[in-house]
Amino acid sequence: MLMKAAVLELAPHLKIAKSATTRAPREPDDALAYDFISVERFELKRQRGDFIEAVRHGNNFYGYDRGTVNVAMHHKHGICIATEHGILELKKAGYLVRPVKVTSFGEEAKAMRDAFYQEHPERVKDDYERSRMRIDYDLEILNSFEPGGKEKAIKLLVDYIANVTKCRSSVL
Image 1 (cartoon, rainbow, N blue to C red):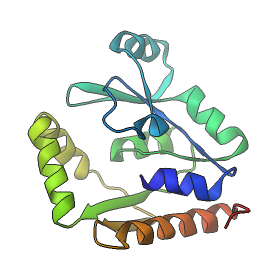
Image 2 (cartoon, helix red, strand yellow):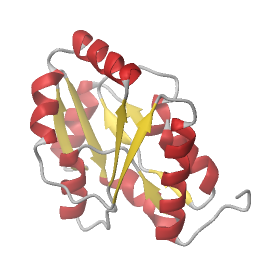
Image 3 (spheres, one colour):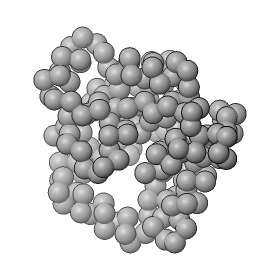
Image 4 (cartoon, rainbow, N blue to C red):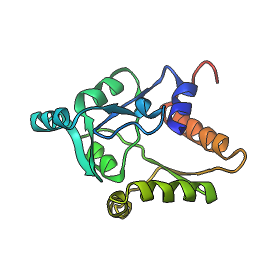
């Protein structure tokens, strides 16, 4: 996960702003980017107005809790995984958002996408609609599964964040 690598490289200057979701974890590192909550708790938080953004993707709900984002931004620069809709809602809520688009390509990436959509056919339409939203990205990174591709993508992301935030970890 590129975000994990960036946080490790730029710690302690970077904090993850997690998204709440009702979906089940898919990978061990998912807990770095998501707080997994029940549908009932998600609905309660939505009714209280806790979310900056609350959307349904496929059969699951995702949202950025205002408190979680504010904690991430209080002492540090925040980083999160956001959809196009999430980027627009964070901007609308007054947060300074520097969107970076990461696109995976190559045969392995295509096989992973095809397998995902095979398992989650309800996401095809949602993802297509989101992809049509207009976002001006500060940077677009191509993440390949070729030798050295992930490392190159991590370096581009870390260098961009370090330049924008003017922070560097003592380990760099």
